[in-house]
Length: 180
Ligand SMILES: *[C@@H]1O[C@H](CO)[C@@H](O)[C@H](O)[C@H]1NC(C)=O
Ligand SMILES: [Cu+2]
Ligand SMILES: [Zn+2]
Image (cartoon, rainbow, N blue to C red):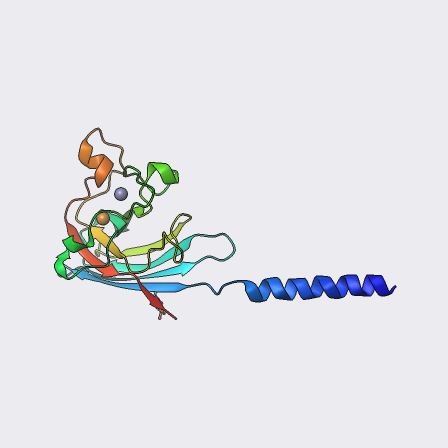
């Protein structure tokens, strides 16, 4: 009888320990600006249960249709505007791809396209399983960029497709910053 009680006490203790050891989910936010009238706010939230990050927000002032959307390497959006953000964030040294491709066939920063409606508004709600808000491949302090053109997801037969998806110029960008 005593051993059973101790067994359950132990299980309860271990459960409490596991729960209290779980790190709190991190949140980040990017305020995007660049070529007027394009602006946006994008939130990033760690998904504790499934892993990965939810990217949630809205960009306005776009032309109707698809626009390439990526995490870029640097958090510098001031020296030369959005161009100082560098290339797509690419810790695995992969070619450009789309969000559904495996980690070695996409840049970690490849989030595909956002789609603007007739009013130029893109409502964004993406769950990405490779983005991280902690560790060596964290996207904190890097930047998010929306482009003039559609991202071809690396599917065209030209060099630029494997590098940027032919997404064209950078319309707006923002630094991915820690928030409560
Ligand atoms: C983003 O997160 C902030 C809290 O940091 C919240 O106030 C805001 O409503 C969120 N925006 C969107 C578009 O979810
Ligand atoms: Cu980009
Ligand atoms: Zn890319």
